[in-house]
Image 1 (cartoon, rainbow, N blue to C red):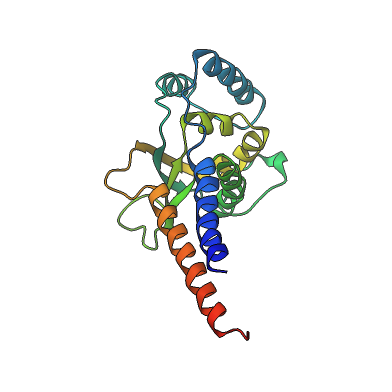
Image 2: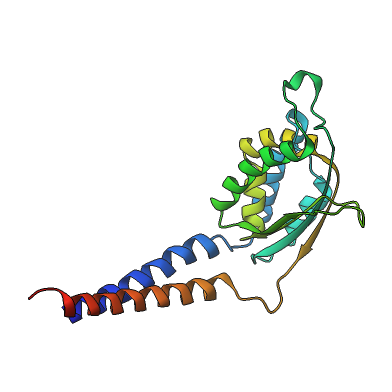
Length: 209
């Protein structure tokens, strides 16, 4: 019994760590020049045929300088009071509501690529500044970001983003002195393994013989 319990309490945490590492860290290989060119062709076509908008020279430069490492963006948004949709779009609502429509799609696309929001908040008092919302996002790699940009779902959801935003700024940052996700999930898995072991030991002692 103890041998089986020891095995389970080790296998489950290790499985959690392996699965998490695959999701959180895979895809860190740097982009080749051919891949950059291929992605940019797709994105350039999107900017002509959909509501997607990109600073194409800046994006190309960003991809060419790929280091294969995760990065963070700090995003500041000032919303329209009423969403600025084209008249033939058949959509309405506030700027915040339009942004929420975009966020639902964006978060789903990010999670599929080992990326996720870290922090997001609306300012309750905007009297001291022009920004309505701040969002901090962790991307697994530049490859994942451009792969997200190249999807039809992102291109279609962009109509909500640009209908919502009156003004925005984005800053690229790297985390300093913050616990890495691998460290956090390792601690979590170790605690889970300990709980499984202790619970199993307790149950084996109290259950009827």
